[in-house]
Image 1 (tube, one colour):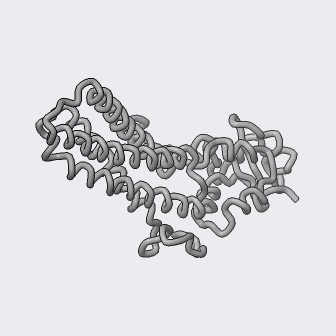
Image 2 (cartoon, one colour):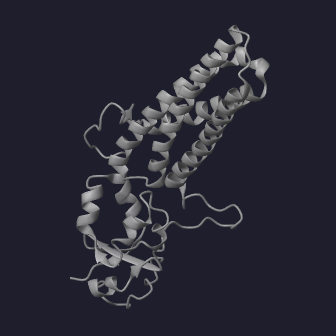
Image 3 (cartoon, rainbow, N blue to C red):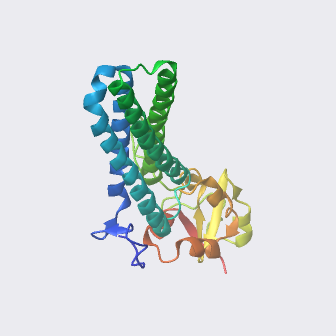
Length: 265
């Protein structure tokens, strides 16, 4: 469940759920479809008259949808944390969606003018076509990368590898009957000095609100990028975690999976 935080604007929630997973389907589906149709029109001139206006409409909806996806993504990030590379690619997706829409519309109006005047577009038409094809190909690539990074941010480390034969855990926390590596059995807690010894990507521990967490596997999985986690390795990160995720249930639930012991008084 989402934390009972104040609304982050009209693009935050829909029926009590994040709007972003719904809004993102518009550009993710329509932008590649429109880009492929643009490439088809460039390759097969006789189909241009029939496809041009429907393709322009599809690209226009995709461009508007990309803005809705961006705004709803920013609202979701305020609740669960920034998704790092996915957010950056989302910004690129908005830009390229509008460029492809505007470029396709301008190209078709130019093509119609030459058709009506029964003039060939010549070398200029070839160059413009190549540029438009490049933008369409870029739109396909950026859409795939944006979708992939978004899926990784949500599902990375949670879905078992089909070839592994067994589902991996998302935490390095030891079973209840074992002691975490480096922790002396029978102690009343883990000292902050011992936490400080685990301060890099090979072994990253952090103390948060009196509990020690082994965040090593989370370094590469954190939606906001590894630097956010590496910056708190070996420290008491209570203030940093509270500043970023105060009142948010999802990050707190995720964090609980990495608990390895209590911080010694």
